[in-house]
Image 1 (cartoon, rainbow, N blue to C red):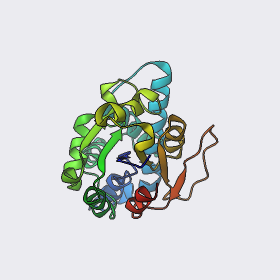
Image 2: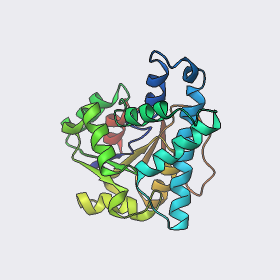
Image 3: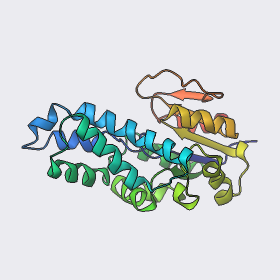
Length: 229
């Protein structure tokens, strides 16, 4: 059964989650933060993800914006920057304007030109995702933006992946799911999607019952891969 629908995780896959900290570190007057921004960005993302998993297991859902703030607060405290309220405010503001990776607009446009349905499937709240899509200028090459908020639980709960079939009326075998998170792509493999792990950092494969079916270092060749499946 050929692929009809290409679905992407948002943060770290289409949008550069380190961009907020990188941009803040380059601004005048933030020399102290510049010495810590790489660690803060890494800690922020790690805690953000960990809190989604813990909340899902504990049945204590909160929207992704609250989780994002919680992760940042932990990361700033870990680097001795918890008292810098202006820095916190600036980082959170920049998170609503994350840059897309350079290859993203052309890749999505190529998929649409080839007749594929395209969508985001993300932990992000609808408002956050709307801001990111508008900032990146990719709304015209996406058919929909699906948020976990409609089911009230974070990935990798199967109810999140169910949203794709519910929205597009497609079988699992018709979906190519792309994520920068190895665990996300692996669990989507177990769900029945064709999968791609965009492993930009060259990380090891997560030790899970399933592994991503395909591995790439960026998104450039997604249209060609979709046509080959």
